[in-house]
Amino acid sequence: MKQNLYEFDGSHNGTGKDINMPEENTITIQIKNDVAVVNSDEILISDTQSALDLMATVKYETDCDCIAIPKLAVAENFFILSTGLAGDVLQKFVTYRVKLAIIGDFSRYTSKPLHDFIYESNKGSHVFFTGTEAEAIAKLTGARHE
Image (cartoon, rainbow, N blue to C red; front, side, top):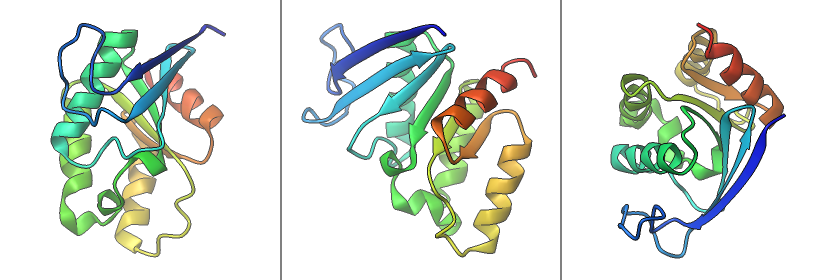
């Protein structure tokens, strides 16, 4: 399995140019089977622009078009479908042909529309909600061939 490790200050993309992420945020990216596995103890996706920033940073730093991110790095209002955040953010990933897996435990959510959204997303080929990193990598690498 091909694996590289990138660690950088989230405020710069390696060229000294600002990318609108908090300076104190350190993002760790491991490349596993051509999937960028992103880890951060800070929220990385809080709105459409932060999602675009994440995509651009990962693409620039790793040249990967598949990203796995922990649920804790996604703003909680993403999981409240009535905010529209999930739809807006995920549409950007689809538009820019970047596949995304969000890793975590989604069982605590009681919203039937959210459960249906997760179920339908997991049947597709662009966005996945998984319980483990291994499952995320498997889904993303399988999705690359569709």
